[in-house]
Image (cartoon, rainbow, N blue to C red):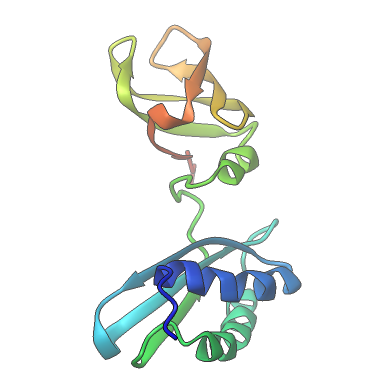
Length: 158
């Protein structure tokens, strides 16, 4: 009997426990392409940063598990990598990890006439975040509903 759940859900279910045992956190799973040109991209996180060795270990462990889960009726390519420092936040956990850091927030509705604000993320709760806005002036603390945030990410200084 064929599993009717979306393929990303099946992949996620198969790889989460493996990544956990490797001390890695799943950030995202993405599928691209069609047929034998399909690519499964697994993005991982680890406190202190993801190394090439982490990606290699995860790839070696996830490959056989995905062969068993058999998410596609054809061949595919598995890629494992870090999503990068400036990745968009997708889950509450991403916001919580960024508390105390400078972030850029793009809004679905303008705040005082501005669609994008910058500041220090002070708090991340279930449905809202508190942001100490530094740009645009004046500096102030605002509470933003997560559903009103189009995109948020760390501001990375090189």
